Amino acid sequence: MKKVNKKSRIPLYYQLMDIIVEMIEIENLKEDDKLPSERELCEQYDVSRSTVRQAIQELEKEGYIYREHGKGTFVSPKKLKQDLLGFYSFTEEMKKMGKKPKSKVLNFKVIKCNEKIAKKMKLEIGDKVYEFTRLRLADNEPMMLETSYVPCNRFPDLTKKELQEKPMYDIFTGKYDASFTRAEEIFQSVLTRSFEAELLEYSEDFPSMMIERITYEKDVIIEYTKGIARGDRFKFHVILNK
Image (tube, rainbow, N blue to C red):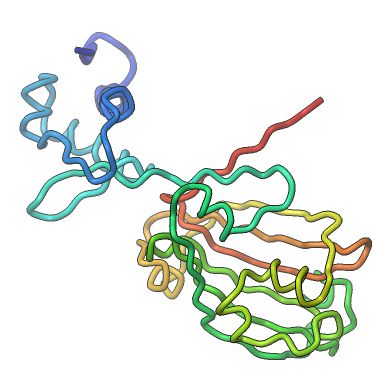
């Protein structure tokens, strides 16, 4: 059994964090498995209650564990790894991971481009675009909140019902014969706003990942999406080739 080294310069709570992570990974603990209590960890590793609590708090922030008042500490669901090689669909990626994907279209409307949207999409101010927001779920758990803008002249007669029933990219390729030539994505860690936290069933105290995506058909932008992904449920995997 790994022990805490009290002579080390590494803080005791940090050492205990490593021990608990190792416990989860090496012992192959499953989602929602219960961890030892604070008292048990104190006795097992000969550390104070404050050390244990600090380790638990940090691990909770990092998404390894979660706590239920009066019940204990449990292993968090595994983070969903998103590979950033080529185009990807939330629906297809969730299916690959054995999750049941679902999207709820929270709003859908036609708007005229303001200066910000026109600049992002290389359109003229006043050009019409669809604006719609979708809550993306996996196994009925909220994962991501996405607001998308697509040009009306490229996708005439797009409906809320279609987006509710089919993945967006399937509609684009099937109904409109669209082809995606490239996409740009920008990632930024942000604080979760109150309305986002409510929809994502997440805490305002925890960070989220903001993802901005611009999709091209040849040299024409056909999609601009701004998404907020829960920081405790996603990790992104990039391979860099020379």
